[in-house]
Image (cartoon, rainbow, N blue to C red):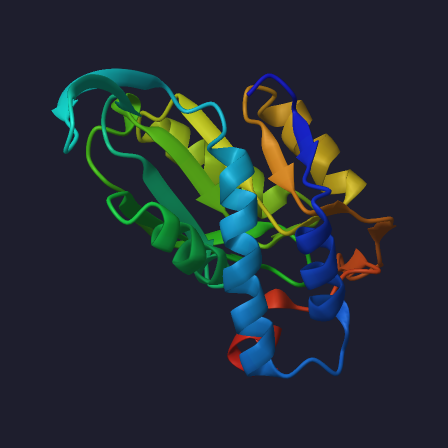
Amino acid sequence: MPKHLTIVEHPLVQHKLTLMRDKDTPTAVFRQLLREISHLLAYEVTRDLPMTTKNIETPLVEMEAPTLKGKKLALVSILRAGNGLLDGVLELIPSARVGFVGLYRDEATLQPVQYYFKVPAEMENRVVIAVDPMLATGNSSAAAIDLLKKSGATDIRFLCLLAAPEGVARMKEVHPDVPVVTAALDDRLNEKGYILPGLGDAGDRMFGTK
């Protein structure tokens, strides 16, 4: 994926995103929309996966048919909100291996604090897709990618629902080799580090917490 930033402008993605932004959209509907939109975003982030062929028999003839090449993908959720995207992508790629990075943002410094890390073996041989609905300051996302690279991963893509210009710039600065796929590039961050216009806190919207 050569481009650093890809914005998925498909009409269904944009329509579902508008519904998710609406503050009156209830938790259950928000969760369902996130699952649906993740399918569409996953289509884009997996567009150029390496392919090979294998010999199969259809009911009529033998043929050389295209199939995915190499080790099974690794999907890595940046907890906790990443699980909403993870569930949808996993439905599309059920054979993928799954990892988790636990980071929370210190509200005073806006810096990430790690509390959990568990990923599949042989990360160096897998295409790795890191998922987190919000790319805000980029600090947590960059820290998660740091950890994935330390685990051996070299082919990493970052999938998010919304991105702020500050987060995109941060990721490009520290991880220029990691393409970002998102549904929208919003205007800016507020003084608390939330994306504007955004959709609020994705984890709270998804799980019904405050």
